[in-house]
Length: 209
Image (tube, rainbow, N blue to C red):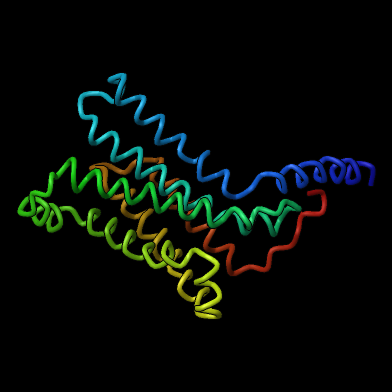
């Protein structure tokens, strides 16, 4: 009991601190990875193929933020930390980075050379998977506001169910983009599947948290 009480004493100030951190702050905080990429680009730290490196870093950041968005619900259910109110910020910022990832490929890498783009789509299925994932995320981004929640009512949750196929397809896109199987990509896909699996279980709060 003393240990549990001590943990409660620690949790209370953390929750008080979280209440002071507005969700809007994360729209600024989550620009840090983009700033880091820009600094790397300006300093010449992106290697011999900077466009590919930018594509990769933007895509990884977007996917990781999307995964973290999914993780916020089980973390909240298992602990005493109320993190649900940050889901919108993390979700929208993941869409922001994934869109930048796509635009970097389309505008800077492929430079709108449509014949090469079509060839890439036919020869590299992971590109098609990435596009499908992005398309699935579009209605989620558009409806991530209070107005849409009121207007769509019960349909809003159905629309946002699209996050599950979107993140799985995004994970497959990441896995298949390399010529050989990469451990980070496999680990990412496993984490995605575990988080989605948790959705089917009734999670109980961990008492000491």
